[in-house]
Structures are given as C-alpha cells and as structure tokens.
Amino acid sequence: MLLRFSLNADLITSADIPDEAVAAIGQAVDEANKSTFQRGVPAEAEPNDIGRIMAWNAAGTALHLEIESGPYTRAHDALFRFRKQLAPVLGRHRIGIRSIEVTAFTVRLEGTIDPAAIPHLPMIRETAADEEGITLTLDVSPTDLENKVPDRLVRLIEEKAEAHAYGGKAEHWELIYESPKQPVQFTDDPTAEMLKRGWIKHGASRGQWIFGPQPVQLFRAFETIVIEEIIRPLGFSEMIFPKLVPWEVWKRSGHAKGVYPEIYYVFTPKTRDPAYWEDVADYYKVTGEVPVEMIRDRLDGPIGGMCYAQCPPFWPFVQGETLANDCLPARVFDRSGTSHRYESGGIHGIERVDEFHRIEVLWLGTADQTVEVADRLHEAYTRVFDELLELEWRCARVTPWFMAQEGLVGVSENESIGTRDYEAILPYSNGWLEFQNVSVNGNKYPKGFNVKIQSGAECWSGCSGIGLERWTAAFLAQKGFDVSKWPERVAKLMGEPEEVFRFL
Ligand code: ATP
Ligand code: ZN
Ligand code: MG
Image (cartoon, rainbow, N blue to C red; front, side):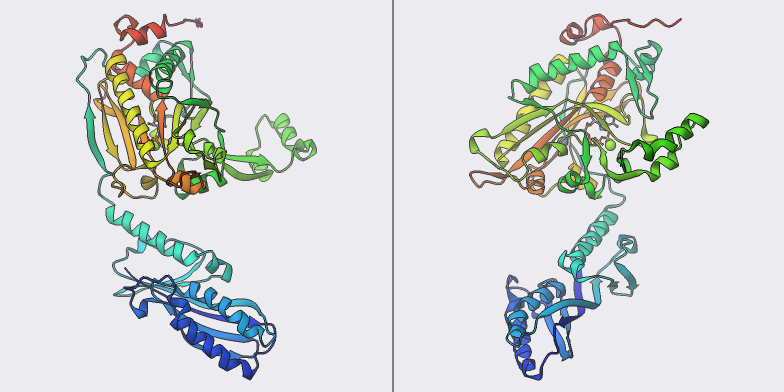
C-alpha cells in the first residue's frame, strides 16, 4: 500500500521574525532535508519516501511550513524534528517558538482499500476516494501528531483491510492430537439432566447458575485432580488475582483493542454521601421499582469491567520489574473468583454462560522456558484426560487470542507463539466443546507491562484457562450420572452426591 503524508503548519514565534534570521532559517531547512530527516531511514528508501520541507516562508510571528513524506520520517515526525533543530537558531535572535498550528493534514493511501476499512473517527474530517486510492483529511492538533495519531490511524486501516480480506475464511484450526475413542455411556444433555435432578437452578441474572452441592462436589473433584496431577507436580504456586479490571490493565494487556461487546462494565457512585442517594432510595420505597435512570446519572465510569480473561489483572504485580534469573520460570495460578462475559444469545447450558469458574495457570520466563512449561502442561493434561477422566477429546492449534481479537485469523509468525484449544465430544449433540486452552503469548504481556529479565533475555509468558463448567459439561455428557460407572479416581473424589434440599 502506497502511503503519503502532507502537512501544513505554522510555527508561532514569540516575536516577529526579523529579516536577518531568514537566511539562517533557510540553512536550517536545507540541513533538515539533507541530514536531520535522513536519520534512522533504511538505506533502500527512495528520496521521495522521506520527509521533506517542500516550501516555507516567514511572515510576522509565523513560520509557515509545507512538509511531505512517504513512510519514512513522516511529515509529522519531520515537523517536530525541525522544531527542535530550529529552536537554537531562532534563540540567537532572542525569539522562542510559542506553539504550533496545524493548518492542513492529509494522508494518502493507494491500493485496494475496502471503504469498510476506514474507521469512523472524529479526527477524520473528510474521506475522498478515487481510482487509485483514498485521501483522508484529518483534524488534528499538534498533541495528536506528537501522540502519533496518524500512524495509529494508518495501522488501524491496514488491520481492518486485512480482516476484511480474510472475511469469509475460517480461523486457523489444525489438529495436533486426537484421543482414543471412548464407549458412549450417555446421550442426553447433562444440563437438562442436572436441572431434572435439582442439582442446579437458574440464577437471577442472565447466563448464571446456582450450583447445588452435587455439581460442586464434581467441581472440587476436578480441582483436586488439577492440583494433585498438574499444578503441584509442575511447581505452580497459588496467588489471588483481582477480579475487577480497570482500563489501565486492559490497555496494557491488549484487551482494550476489542473486548467491548463482551464486557460486564463496572461503575462507581459519584459520591457515597447518603443525601446524594436519598431520593433514589425514596423512589424505590414509594414505587417498589429501582430507578435505573436516576442511578445512571449518579455514577462515574465505567472504570473498567469484571474479570474477562483471568490473567491480565495479575500483571501489575510484576509491572516495571526486572525478574531475577533464578526465579524463572515463575509459575502461579489463581482460582479465586468468577469470570464474566456477556455472551448474548450464545448462552447454552452450563457450558456457555455469562458467569463462570476457571482455574487460570500462568507462567513467565525466557522464550525457551515458557515454551517448555507449555509442553509439560500439555503432557500432564493429556495424561489426565486420557487416563483419569477417560475423555474422548482432541487438541488443535488455533488463531492466538490476541490475533483473534484484532480481527485477524491464521497463526502467529513465530511458530511457538499461539493457542492450543482442548475440545471434548458431546455425544448428545455430536458437537465438540472447547473446555480449556493453553497459550504461549510470546512477549505480549511482558512488553505491555514492561517486565524484564536479569540476563537481558526477552521475557515471555503463557497461560492456561481451565473452565470448570466446561470440564463438568464435557465429563457428564460423556460419562452420564451413574457414579458407579465413572472412572475410579473421579468417582472416589466425588463421593455420594449430597441431597441437601427436598422440595415439596
Ligand atoms: P469460545 O470460543 O467457546 O467462546 P473462547 O475462545 O471465548 O471460547 P477463551 O477466551 O479462550 O474462550 O477462554 C478460556 C477458557 O475459558 C475456555 O476454554 C473455557 O473453558 C472458559 N470459557 C470461556 N468462555 C466461557 C463461557 N462463556 N462459559 C463458560 N466457560 C467459558
Ligand atoms: Zn490468560
Ligand atoms: Mg468466547
């Protein structure tokens, strides 16, 4: 894709630019074009690709500049480099640069660009399309330019164009393991059966279950197996991760790029002064209705959301730190609370819900250490599913979560970065259910949270989310409810289902 930037701006000075300064400004412009703007540009770049001051003139307290560039030393970068270079030149005439006024900024993109890839942003004043491409006229302040808004905009358009080009294609899915077949022991939907038996009831909120003692016995049986067979032998230690996640964390983890449709948002009261809330409480007392609109007016936020992926809120623990070589690979896990996702119409049984329970396993270290832990985990899981749970399951390499989130499909360029999904067959529907995954996330989180390693090696991390509802759905769908026919270890840990409630 051909890329051009053109920028008109005025550098506003603290006093009229005297005639004596004009020659020195001309010299500064020449030097900028010949050397300052060439810095950091790859040797193969065409002269036309590099930022250049095309025209300038000084009038009163304004130095008018017209800058053009291709992809290197982009017009806006050139502007700031030039300001820095010019400051001492004007300083000799006791003149300072007060401010910058951007009078025009356009971005030209050539190539096949789907109009749907052009985002609707307040900064785009006008989009003009022609045979060869599009021209975007931007409304941008100097601060926007310093914050690299044009670069992010171009990157976003490229990403959207890629996603559109992939449009119809399926996400990457590549089988890497298939378990032996298992005899079919049950063919009904386990959620319906649990409801019939009074093991679970719908919670008052959407996509939420109240789990009675019996399914919780099974949850805990699975937890014990995970801890005894996987987590302890592989040396993971328990932590407690927060479950309310502020934007600051999702900005760094990358989730802020796309998680919006599925978040359960969190707000705080504007004040905890009871007087401020009295009329809300009174309204409820009189009408018996909670005045949701009145409440909305009295809230700040959203400040973030409820736990979505379990690991991002761990990262502030190591943020900005350098990890000692001898503590790596650091291995931890969290099972301290619920995860929440707005699954909309996708809700199904206990396996796709808005509120669920997960054990999240997380590790970090060098690239080799991180990949090694993922492989050890995969081996341990394989043994548990084949020998202890006797599941019929398979494992596939899929599009990594962070690529999926950016609307991309396929696999990462680095072979060892990516996600493995673990899927079990559900005999009642003959469909496959993803019940957990293992991801090697490369330097994604350490980079986002600025985590380094003593040796200077690049820090990588991985994580694995063990969904207890999904394990339970998969296990019961295949093994049914006759505990005497279950694999021995699970049956023993489960014990007799406890019948606490009897309804008349
Ligand atoms: P799916 O494609 O089924 O929606 P996902 O790709 O969104 O799954 P991940 O983001 O990889 O899932 O989450 C990791 C794990 O969390 C899943 O393997 C699963 O065990 C669990 N999980 C995710 N979403 C739900 C949900 N809505 N209900 C129950 N468990 C879930
Ligand atoms: Zn994770
Ligand atoms: Mg999902």
